[in-house]
Amino acid sequence: MPEPEKQLCAYCDEGEALDAFGIIIAELPASKLVLFKEQSHKGRVIVASKHHVSEIVDLSDEEREAFLNDVNHVAKALHAAFHPDKINYGAYGDDGHHLHFHLCPKYRDGFEWKTVFAMNPDRVHLDESQYQELAKAIIQHL
Image 1 (tube, rainbow, N blue to C red):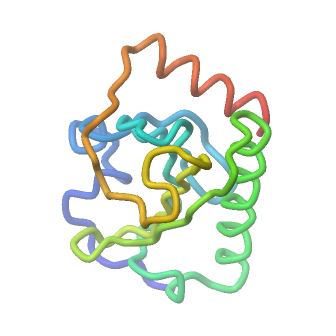
Image 2: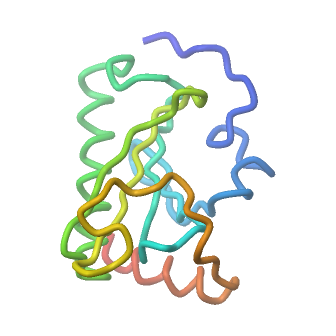
């Protein structure tokens, strides 16, 4: 499918816009895996399509299958690394036009249990070594 014109896309440009909220930790077959810097939910990541499309319906059948396989693969890695009670999935982006899913591990009796996770609660930010530790834990299970 044709890709829409790219305008300041954090996932495509991989510059300051992405650095403001995430760190690319892996390249997957159909996506980039981004560690979300705000870690109120330990292990929260973003799986961003390698295709600059706005909607999942803009992918071909093969591209969609590959992207969802990446999402599934990452979810399994999060379960293995952090043992959440549930993973919430969010595909927002009213203003951002690049297909991506937030994978948000949720923990019973933890922050926002039984509620929709906030886009950016701005509660928990880590230092560089802590981000590297989280990334390593995820990557070893991919």
